[in-house]
Image (cartoon, rainbow, N blue to C red):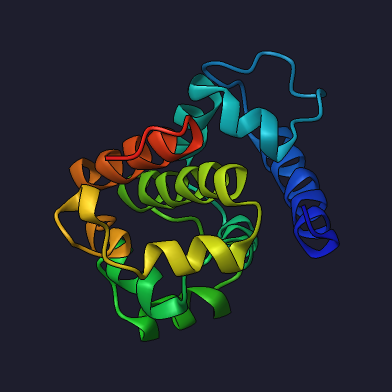
Length: 167
């Protein structure tokens, strides 16, 4: 992975640890003093549920956004808000996304992580996302990411590619 990705993940590690330490007693994380890395969060569905329920802080969203292959207009579409609303959230101190938005942010983080594992770079992942896929009915994968069923199709295709199973 590139050094810029590792740098963003390092910042995410700090923000996520800070976020968990700021929470009261959590449902699934009992030791609030423990440091939580971005990778640990992405691998632990129970921690993801806790983050989603508590609402992702805007700082964490911005880091996930900078790690992803998606533009601000893509994020606005995924979250079903305007780009102006996203810009307004940026000016609000300590803004946390509601749970439905937080869930979508985590879904896109998951797509990004798996896509990076498969393709090795943001550029290759971005190219794949914006190229019609025969296995996905000649639809661009990015066009399927707005809902959870489409996201599951994209993730399934990424896993197939990673295992060399081409349709």
